[in-house]
Image 1 (cartoon, rainbow, N blue to C red):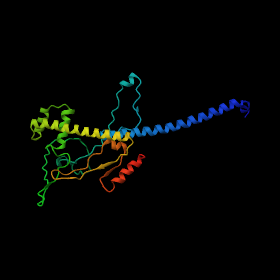
Image 2: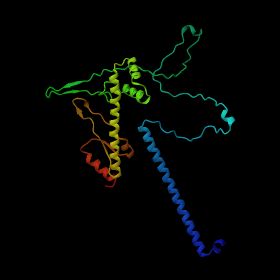
Image 3: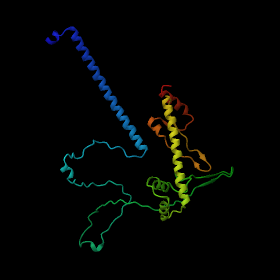
Image 4: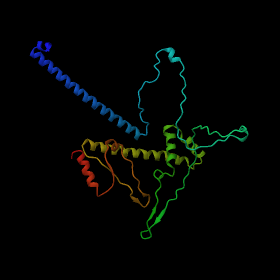
Length: 283
């Protein structure tokens, strides 16, 4: 109180103004920290979504730099103790191993099992015969044939074979003659010309799909920039006498990021969906 009484009115007013401004700065700083935390969470959410769409592993959560802090030359040269860790791998089949009767000790009884998991792969031919139903309409003369599963149409070779061939050639730089020999050894009936067309044709389909997705993304981005409402409509189950019924397509990544609602086509509710999307953006 004595100190405050000794201050002049002008200095006391100045100090009060400084305290008020300091409180305002502290309050603004707290708001900025809160907004920064929200932005970091949003960035992490978008990064996780991109990794999911690209089939990449999720970014590990945890603190960095938990290893040994090796500061001296002597410590760096010290061998590290090898840590044995159990692998948690999926099991595809179980095979029982028996102890031969001559090796069983006299009077011994079975005492459970010792489990050992060994990882292995199986590369073999897997040709499939599809029995596709045919329905004939006597009145119109039209024939409806059951469609092939998605990914099996238009090529004559299955999706796994095509993916393996593309990976070997374009990612692992395996030559076409080596790939052709590999397939022939597995019993696949394919000529060098068919293999060449398979590589080019399949890659062209991927490039066309990439361009379609890119163009769709640009349209979505432009609509978002203009402030338009967004909604998606699934249009599938359309009957075709040659290929059967169309299946549901993939959702563009930009729609997932924008969190736009997506509906199955319904003419009676379409107007309500459009109106709700417009109200969401204030139109």
